[in-house]
Amino acid sequence: MLKQRIITALLLLAVLLPALFHSDPQPFCLLTLLLIVAGGWEWGRLNGLGFAASLACGFGLGALLGLAWWQVGLERELPLLWQLAGAFWLVATLLLLRAGVAGWPRIPRSLRLVAGLLLIGLAWWAMAQARVQGVELLLSILALVWTADIAAYFGGKAFGRRKLAPSISPGKSWAGVYSGALGVLLLASCWTWVEQRYGMPGASLYGRLWAMGPLPALLGLLLLTAMSVCGDLIESLVKRSAGVKDSSQLLPGHGGVLDRVDALLPVLPLAMMLATF
Image (cartoon, rainbow, N blue to C red; front, side, top):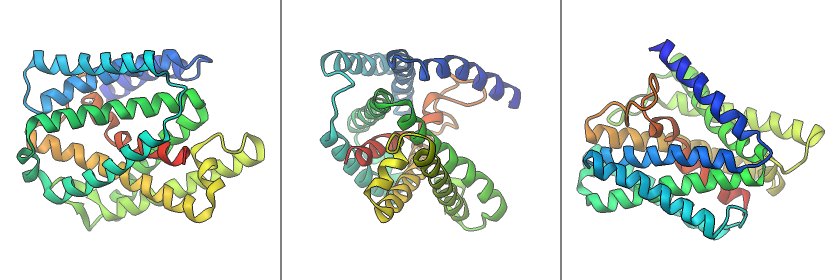
């Protein structure tokens, strides 16, 4: 399993990293759009659709995003869109986690399908817009989620006695959440210092938050860290309701696309909301 995980990760990095750092953001946006098509297919399967219907969800989502890309363009800033998306994520997260695994099947399947595909699509649009605005902005958002996840893992392993949501994700603990938050605050502090001293202030998410003031920056970072945890919890909730361990087996050793991006789904639009506030 570990060998599979390493091989898959190296192959993905070999494809995505050159596209990410290419002077033109379009190759990266196109490659990630293909992954979103796969994510749409997985979402259909998690909601009980057959192979053909799930495939239609994936390609339909990709076609709509491609059409929006062509008609609207990724350069156009859409602060109102990110404010609405952020508000929706906050409300939906509270309702879903409160209802738990048992509450998920009570939501009409058509509503689950449409809302899920919409949120997956918005996450891609936020990621693409962040890349268009600059590699450093996108990297700082991705690094926040990676740091929160890694710090939460080690903090939870060392100190995790009180479980966060045992009925949804038994492995998560409050110690992991606190460790993730501390890791993110340390990352943001170091990144902001380096950016102000050697780089271009305001190029990263952390620089933009710091420009608002220390308190808004702190609250924004804590919000994004919390939502990264919630994104993971919500996907676990959906998978438990569907009776599956992974969203698919498209990425050997890692599960599916949604398993890899679950924490990013709420963080990306919320980060763009804060970055364009």
